[in-house]
Image (tube, rainbow, N blue to C red; front, side, top):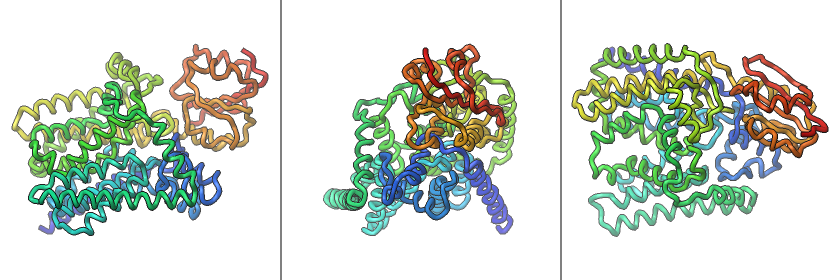
Length: 549
């Protein structure tokens, strides 16, 4: 018994170290796209705006970031403290829940699934609201589940409080009260009157808390509220199911990784229809799918960070309904290790094959190019992973998915538990390999470092009245205040600059612009005022004066 405890502790410490490593490595990298908003709000706004923000999101995301920035400064890593800590807190909740329900060994298995799960890592160290939103949502779900067991109003009030916090972080947090309301309404063994009363009490408390905070925010700094409502209205796309087009859904599935196949195999083979009305995590999954399909703002853009809120429930469901599979994992450790080692070595070998890097947007062209090249292309992995995403060799993705798809089909039609076990081993190897690329450890050109380097030096470069930036939207947040800046693609360059006479062009040349591109002939009459190739990626700034087409 003592030896078993020591082994569990040793495994736990190793997994914790891996978990923290992938979330803390490169934590000071460039703030990109929406990541820059909390910092620019804090730096450029006066009190109380710097603490409540005016960039179109509810104020709870800006407040903790601004407090930390006022104490610790405005380094990039300061704005990633909240996401990392929220991720750790959510993981502790999951481990505590599974330990209490199924035992320490199953909790350890959940940590194994989370430690190098690329999507979970993405939510953990991006300076975005997702990680904090996930913490509040999983807290509300667990309190609602406890209310069902204890019937204590304090648990229901706690669920309502965390649901309100989720809404105050992002309006899409509405998925939590939707799922909880359905869970209460479907509760067995309770009278209809009690269930209706509980639903009204829960939603009334949630709405009251949310309204009180938002009214207070309005009186303190009206723009924080009006910008949030305006941004929500601009998103549009309501009830045009499915708003997300098929290519976007396919890309989301690709980005989630083969773990989605294992999750699907568990749901198809080990859940019953009644589970979908009695299990709060299944109800939350269904609520999330409905809301994110019906309310997505752009049919062609897969908002992967929205779907990431389902990760904690996804892990809990896999452990809960797949306990027999994970029990065999504990006894068949040799098979797991062999499958993992062989797959991981194979993926690393595939990564050594030279893959061309081409500009790929997450749209239909993305899917066509990936399939037409049989995976022989560097694939941008997630719309949130840095200035241009991080890149993964397509052969790894195609091979990993192909093997896991075969094991998925066999697992559904076979009762042999070795096939789901092999599927888990391939999934773990795949996730670890992707996480190494995500962490920038695989000796690829590093656009994050190149972008950071250019930003550090841009203040000493003479810039024109207008600034055009190639693809890297993160740069715009660091440009001098008052500059008219915009992002361009190579094909649009001539059109966006045709009416400009005194402007600068900022290029972090990744993905590489073709030497035959018209942009280079357009820039021949301009002066290159900055150049660096320190990180294997060309950084250039051109200043164009009296430029005529």
